[in-house]
Length: 227
Length: 408
Figure 1 (tube, rainbow over the protein chains, first blue to last red):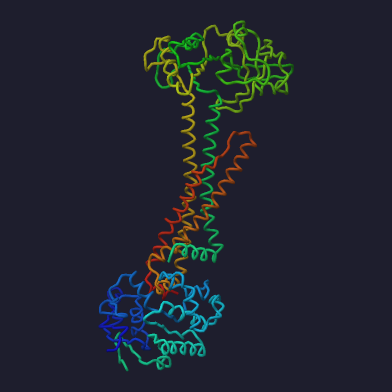
Figure 2 (cartoon, rainbow over the protein chains, first blue to last red):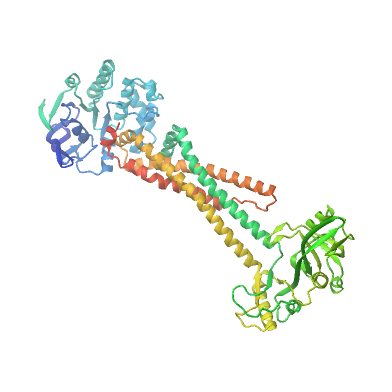
């Protein structure tokens, strides 16, 4: 039996805008196996951001079940969700979202601060930065780094707590094509060599084509789940 | 995330916006400084007034004619014999000494110099009761009193005005109300007292004043000083004096035709007045501290809005509500704590300057920066920071991560 890291069943998210109900997600069911690299695609308004927020435990579904790494998370409290995000989810954002006044090292240490990691914090942060090829940029601040380097710091930050999944939201969207390719190569090698489960949300078919599987969304429903 | 970490991050955040932090702190600095200075000046005023009342003498009672509270029909004058009756060891064991006084305004001439001043007619017991010291000469004796001798003791201000000096005056001759008087001594300066200047006076023997200067046919004294045996016997002495005077004046209880004030009464009255004044001034200063606190809240709200994305990111990385709350509370508390510390310095400087100004203008006011005022101000300013930081911090902690991350 395959080892599913994400099990989603009939997941719905309904927003109320005044008296109008918007069905952002209208019942999606799928699984993602450990070690898979999956792309979530769809036009704007398809519910792709909503799905990413739910998978990343940033939000709760209106109904349906979501098990992350074997743990049911659809009905947890805010602080419990924060804990799950801290331990099991690594985020990579389109606009990097690094703390501008902090060094690379401090940025990578941040998730471990919230995890209560003490002594080995620096050691692990340095190791994470080495693994993304930034061993010589430890004391630099984001303004002293190129876009590609900033995104590498963000990836190191996402990986430092050894999460079950890595959520990447348009990770190459703010980068030139050369840096974008480097970042995709880094993600691919992380998936290949460390069996990191990676979910990329993107509207770029070239990016999606490099993954093993594409989940296409349209109007809150899955169009096809090609193997 | 632990508190130490939160404080370090808060310091980094505050130092990245130095001008803004400094201006926010300034509000608290002024507030705390004003509170401390006002409390210091208030307690300085209190001890100055208390000190000048104690300077009159020790364990004193003041007996006046008349009754201020009730409407008593017949008011008999206090007499010299009344005062002597208070010395009865059996009826008034708590009374140590008594000094009857009559007074009036007189003009004094020496050569071409002329001045007018208050003249007190006193007995020899006035010196120990009022705790007077002489810079030269001797005090009035019993013989001089009984013989209505034309002798006078000069207050230092009077001596200065007439002679331009305060020593070498014994044996000089002056004219009071046209009559020749011989100077037998000069009083030591007592400084400005609660009852006007204690230095701009002359003392003459009681009988001389009554018969030669004021021409009173009636035996009437204006004030009787009564000194109690000790500070614990002041109340007892007051009761004994009242009883003796009631018996001599044939008055009922509640219809006294005299009033007894103790030094403690004056001190208590003065303390009430200065306390009200201190609270009033402190309250006004407290308002500026409140305004400073609102300044903190304002800046923290701006900061929360500016850093909405950062808050969203921290939440995405696993920050719980408490972590965000602590982070922002640490910032606002540090702002007010720094403000409080600098404010203590400012308050001290203001007190010092006020003390110097008072000293330069011969006012006996020494502001006292008490440790209690410092503690109060520090505690209060930190509480202000926590209180006014709570709302913005709570707002930050309750941001939805999805919304916060999307914020531009």
